Length: 52
Length: 206
Image (cartoon, rainbow over all chains, first blue to last red):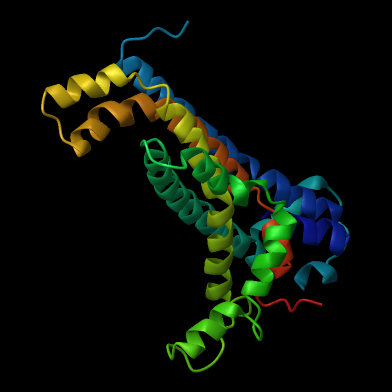
């Protein structure tokens, strides 16, 4: 997706489309971060640690 | 390409509407997800194995740790160019070796065939990414108190039980951080794919 974004925005000159492809990556990246965060929270909860 | 025949959008949302109908975009989503998932899983497995290996007492431990770091310290573009030579359709040393061993009759088109190109860039990414996972997990392994291992050994635990009930739980926070970074870096990878394929497996390199 990053390379397609570059190809569309810089090589082909469609900046808006390249930006759209780049920003379409954000939900995937947020998803990865949230999975990791919830995994760590679950582990903390299992160990009986507080969120402080 | 379809994008070149497109009129200028009247609003920013039109770009997203256009993307939702664009088969190349969905192919790139599939390729990125495949690349990220396969490379991350393999990097984790090999990185963890290497970290466990380097955590053992062995001769030349410091030298081996430095050697493991080599793929990570080489600039991405340089390693991508090296892989480009390795994956060259005509002069690939991999094809040459396999031909001389009698395993294949003709050269393998590593970057010209879509599936070959996918596995080739995944392989290159794994090679580059393993040191990051291995060294970070090794740092995590060194924080595990040796007394836990001693207690488990006295209790008669075997190597798998020690790993399953001591090493893995103690490493979990570091694994979460390492894998988050690994997935993010792999998902947003640009240089390696651009140098190797110019963004499309079927796009000929100039």
